[in-house]
Length: 288
Image 1 (cartoon, rainbow, N blue to C red):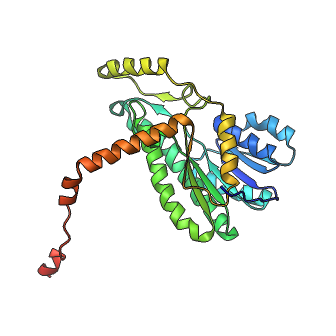
Image 2: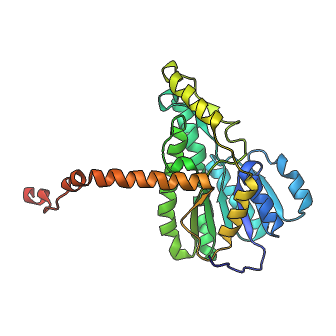
Image 3: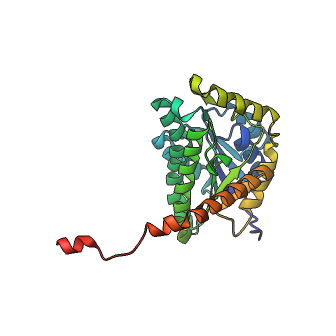
């Protein structure tokens, strides 16, 4: 990994900056001497950072699902600091429940925040990054994008969508000098789970819910958001950042396990897969 050695203070645009990982990212960037635009629905929790770092934090109240408001906030950020160097799409929430239990309103709300919110920010910053010929867009995804898990199906769907869009965006933006990285964190001590929205439980899933509760009780010990922020600082200091970065030993092991099982399944069904394709001339040509 090569360090960029950039001496000038960088300008960050971080969504969901008032709490959790977003707050940790903002603190780390400010501690490094950079300037930060902290965007959140409630910016009051950022007051202490503004006091400790006068002139280097611009707090913007923003709902990322409001596309015109996102465009306006990005324009304000550029006018205030003159440029954008690192954009972190961190805003998100977890809607927990079995797939069958989701109402249309809940399903759409999950996609609006986790996918469309990140899409609107990406679209809003790209013209500025293209004009600069530089910039790094960091999409905060999840272990949920590695596979679907019981009770987080719609959350995973939103993160799968985010990653598919971001892969394409990375290829589209590369020629303009703009980098894109998808960050897949594991468990951190944030309020993602405690503030999650839950569906109305269907009794048919009670046995599965009880089993999941046992697994969680035995379960995971999460990490301090500070560690994720330290990893992010190393990422954005690299001249050649990866398209994807896993954060945490647990998510690292899960990623390899899921990939190995997929490879084994594809190999087992290779004959069927290959038999389903045989190139032939366009049969429609014979009808014309």
